[in-house]
Image (tube, rainbow over all chains, first blue to last red; front, side, top):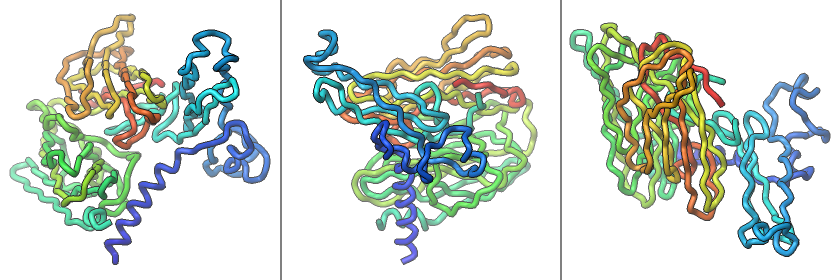
Length: 139
Length: 284
């Protein structure tokens, strides 16, 4: 019994770690549901930081770029079937990485899913900085 | 589930002998992962000797149904997790050696040692393993040689990471980072690290005067053969070590940065001396 319980704890822990990856609807209120439990937006250094020093939830995802495709594309290159090139990931702040997955060309515009990843380590220059061994010196 | 339980409650063995100031410590723990699963788990052992690390060797089961991705040996000031508990970040830990496929045992030259932090109370081994089919667990052992005698030269590991972007399907990406030396040091070993979609690794020295020199180049990355390369480079204060990783994601899904085998990482660990000069400023 004890063995099973212990194993379950380990497995639950691993699953929990991966839950830091979020699928958000960029630009919608749903994206900030966790971040704004009181119904108004949280901003870095804002009022709630002063009264609630607890770590915040994920920030609002930035909306994906609007890229025409298909017959609406501005150039032949844009019109290519693969023209909905996925935008590069970028850091929303020092922790959260925003990246995109494509849903293809929808009604003349490239459709992207915006997703957030909580970096292990920290976020910088469009990626997560992680390491093994000794932690690197801070910037 | 049964397999997972074994590694949580499996026996741990720590043996130590101490002839004339030399200490041989053996740290043994059970390695396992659930079928089609992956674990990051740690075991701790009392730090049985003061002094300096001279060498670290590993007994790790060869890849089969159970694959050991890496094992890292740390010394920590305190540790409150139970054996086999999940562990990812290692804040406050000092890394001493990592086993990965293809790496050789760490054996420092005569007269050199890695300093054990004075406040380190325990050894911690971090295991990253995954398996396909069900199978028996296996023991992993770290053999740690320490000495009480202060070596002529104290060495230390430093890590030069680079940011890992989300790597879109059927695309390539690159990440670059650097750490500037704040004091003169000698670099004796460079150990690059990426995961499965790594294609190229480039380590370089950026001289303060603007010149760039090769430190280590791995033009065709093989995650199954992660060599620690002997190098010999003197850095002056203001010089920097640069890490560049190139990835190629041929799959249909996005590869994300992270610790799992299916994630990606990018850094190089450099063994430098003297340890007291291992002071760095890293960007990004």
